[in-house]
Length: 318
Image (tube, rainbow, N blue to C red; front, side, top):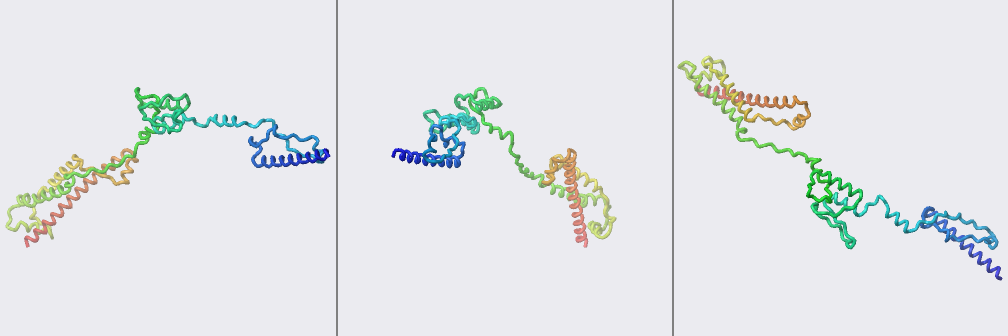
């Protein structure tokens, strides 16, 4: 009776051990064999019963025993986590924030660990720095700063972003052109009026004085110029007077700075890229073209007034 009960008890133990082994295999294959949490220790692994084959009638194939290396404890895992060299300490984070914000951040004390860090101005002291690589780097930056004075606190870390404006100056905004003066605006009108006054003097005063007294009407000789060359009109030195007047007017334009030209936008962008003689030649050429245009305007006004005089003489003499 006792032998049958012992066999039944041995059979139950064998079935229980077989189920435990299958569960361990499933959990190991699902979570990985290297996980220290799910490894079974040698102490918890039940030893096989030597006489199991005699009671059950078959041999149970157990998994190989785990390695003799013990599983890492929780304290060792926590110590390895806190000793990570890539993680920044709280002091290093404060130094980095000081460098970015240009101000000193007071680290929270032990009794005020829940309060946010306070930010002080750059002129106030931030307290002694700890002896770490980041603090040494920041102190070397403060020593290299040429704008730091002797009375300034050496614990204050300078702002590395403060000199970005000097390294990258803002783009120059094109200044609007100065408004033209009243004299410069009236300069073309002065040219025309001076030319007309000179022509009126020679037509009304100089030419009648040079011609002998004739019984015919004085306007008839100007009216004859409409269809033929009239010999009654006397030659006067009008060309030299007109040339002298143009020299005086253009010299005044040059010495007064009225001959400044504004090149087109595309040409103004290309002038700095050209070799050195070409920009000066181009600008001087544009100035001479401007003076030549003013001379042509005066000649056109002179020819127009001569035509008006001939037309008026024809209408008066008829």
